[in-house]
Amino acid sequence: MRSSAPALVLASGWRVDVDGTAHASLRCAGTRGGTADVTVSAKAPDLAGAARVAFTLHVSVVPFTTQG
Image (cartoon, rainbow, N blue to C red):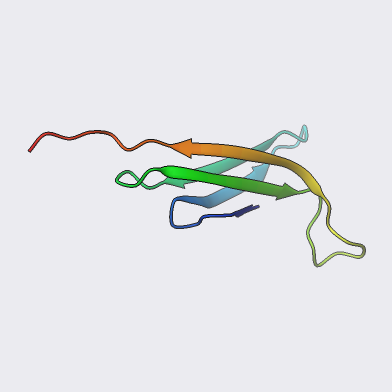
């Protein structure tokens, strides 16, 4: 799993349950706004054969307004 903008959206964790359900943990910057694409490969790139993209998640981050 990788992010196109790690300063904005960082992929911080990944796990697959025994039933095959995958869970991704993402951390988003709270003070910056923007967009990022998080891409997940169908298999690890270090295994035989080329890794292919399983899906791409488009993330939009909107910072919360704060009062001083």
